[in-house]
Amino acid sequence: MLKLGLLGAGRIGITHVKAVQAVPNATISAVYDPFDAAAEAAIELTGAKRATVEEIMASTEIDGVIIATPTDLHAEQIELAAKAGKAIFCEKPIDLSVERVRQCLDIVEETGVTLMVGFNRRFDTSFVRLKSEINDGTIGNVELVQITSRDPSAPPVDYIKRSGGIFRDMMIHDLDMARFLLDEEITEISATGSVLTDPAIGDAGDFDTATATLRTASGKIAVITNSRRASYGYDQRIEVHGSDGMVQAGNHRATTVTVASKDGYKTDPLLDFFMERYADAYRAELQSFVKALSGEIISIPDGQDGLRALELADAALESARSGMSVVLG
Image (cartoon, rainbow, N blue to C red; front, side, top):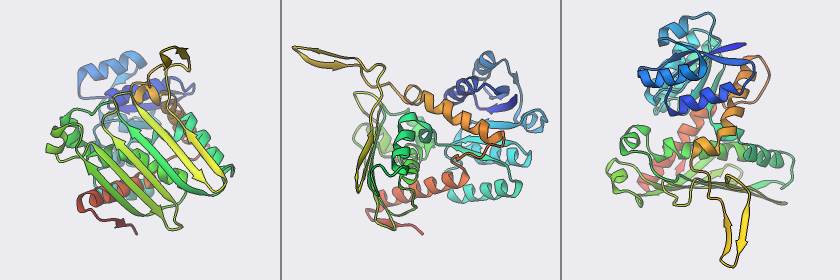
């Protein structure tokens, strides 16, 4: 049984706790959170002991850590875990500073530990199938990727202020997915942003509506659209067009039931938010981490994937502010 330490027992931390509970050969054995209520909620679910970060790192019984603390703590805690020889699963982003991420990854490389970054959408059943169809050559050569990601509502403005903004906090998932599907590095990005849903977001220095157009060296194109507000639910769609056809993954609903009457067709609304929409993906993600921790050769998003996505997010922000395309090295 692999024993994991949980750093951060907030909303995403509890999501990971529930994901680990679905993995038969792993358990949460220690929990760190400075807030009593959060720590106690995780302990009640897991039966784990409460511990400090230092105690978790020093424990010879703990094989790996799940880092779900605020972003400004990620890099430091990754470094502590790496020096302690622990495998690491860390929520994105590693840090909001590209240079700080590079420093952190140098230590990870020196210690040789496993680092997985939480790009959970790579593990969504529909997106995995979509990627499989691409790899199997079903649609020929990929030419155009379209990614739609719209939240049902914006997070609190206090969160917006410390999140790094829509490109680093929200679109970063889609930037990673674009790299994943295109299977080529992005060489040019053009982005734009507006404040259309809440003036307070603009006052905080961020956008609530954004698009980005990405281009690879071979000319493949990806178009991403984001919004902090979708009145009809959590909108998550991908379409990939190729030389021989097209493959798409649509939205999820609670059921597939459709009722038809003289008033038209009615279906269930979209799932409410990411914890419901990507519940299976979170479980598959942690299962992959445990497999990697067990020595199985498996593809996982690593520190370099985290770095590349952040570089793209920074370039998108630069483009949106300047009105100019940004060429990446």
